[in-house]
Length: 83
Image 1 (cartoon, rainbow, N blue to C red):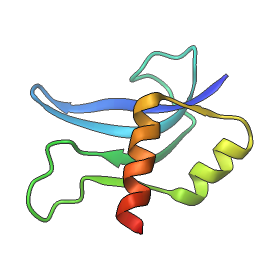
Image 2 (image 1 turned 90 degrees about the vertical axis):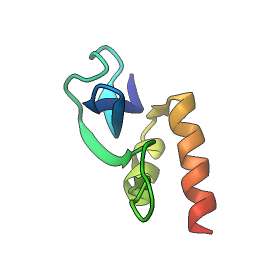
Image 3 (image 1 turned 180 degrees about the vertical axis):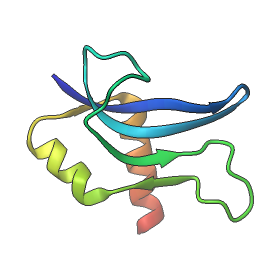
């Protein structure tokens, strides 16, 4: 199954997450199919904290990709920011 989930990057105590489309069997930070955006929980000031390519997200959902609960929450948050 194909899932939309977070892949962790960054340094110790300074996380940075890529929102990726990956096979469910691949480990969290392993190989992925496509990068859809990013989430930076430690963004300060004018830094961008969240970006998601909505067109690609819509495509992957239409072909059956399941998103993780955390990514679902971030999608709702991005939609609220856009509106």
